[in-house]
Each structure stands twice: as C-alpha cells, then as structure tokens.
Length: 240
Image (tube, rainbow, N blue to C red; front, side):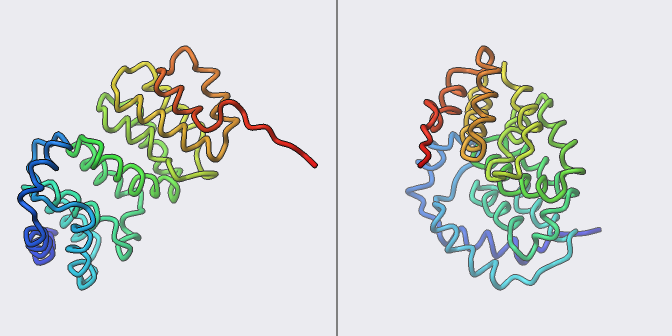
C-alpha cells in the first residue's frame, strides 16, 4: 500500500503553525466564508514558511506524491493546509506526474471537495489547464464531461481551465463549456464565463465578439459586459 510522506506532511503543518497569526485567522475565515478555520497565514507568509520545507524535500515516486497531496488535503484541519497541498502538487520536480492525464482524477477530487473559488480556480488554471494543453486527446473528453456535470465546481473548472492558454486555446471546447452553463443563474458560473471570455479576447477578440453576438440573448449581462470590456467598441486600426 502506498503511503504519504508523513515527514513532509508533519513539516508542512509545523511550518504553518509557526507562521500563524491568531489575530488574522478569523478575519481570513470570514472573508473567505470558510467553514474550515484558518491559522492566520496570508499568502506571502505561507510561501516563505513553506519554501524551506519544499526546497529540502527529496522527490518521491508518483504514488507517494499523490498520497501526500491527499493527506495534506483530506487530513487538513486548517485551510492553509489545503493551500499547501496545492502548492506541493504543483512543485516543479513533480511536473512529470502533475501534468499526466492520469492526474485529472486527483484534481477532480480536490475540485469537488474544495468547492470554493480560492481552491478551485488555482487548480483549474494551474493544474488542470496544463494537463489539457499537454494531453488534449486524453483530457478533452474529461473536461467535456465536467462541463455537463451537475457539480457547480466541475463546470466552473471546465469553463476557466483554459485561461492562460492563449493561442493554444481549444475554442470549440471553450464554447461547449460555456454553452453548457450559459442559462445557469449561479454567480460563479456567470463570473467564470465572463473571466474566460475576457481573457481569450486578449488572444482572439474577433472570436469573442462573434461568440457574444451569437449568444447575446443567453449570456448574462455580467458575462456579456465583462467579455467585451476590453474590445468593445472595436479598436480602430490605421495603416500607413
């Protein structure tokens, strides 16, 4: 049976507790509307606390990497431990494991059990997105399935996971992911659609303008406004 690197898990938890600011814990929890308590370690302090832990860590095999991510995540008592699980999963030495299509099952678990934007968005863009770009044949059917799933956070992941893909964006997949949720009134889906379209507009404004025009009656005012924010009215191109 594959087990987690318990020494690393203990070191992460010890480092986070040492960096904790109890006075900041409740305001952080209230801002994030989190049922799970915070230790009170904002991102800069968290990064500083974890850097020596991760830099001295000896790379393990894929099974141990996966088990360690799950132990940090599922065994978390404080939200910062879940942030640390994501940071560990995304360490460069583990890119060979993290970017395999087989990692999507792990990310799916984290997305569904995380179920809030601070966790899901990081996973969608920096974990799921790279897998899709590296292995489109294997990952695209998975993302397509998420786009049509009943779970809100799977659908948001499908919508926003291509943010940052630029010219590598699969526009057909993006259109399908948006179309699957375009009638949903859930704020996080509407905001995700807006974000995805606004970002892709930096690469292909004509595609985004045409998509919005074709779906004007379906898109929420928020999604429509944000999608066109940087491209409407169309810029005037002058030629010398």
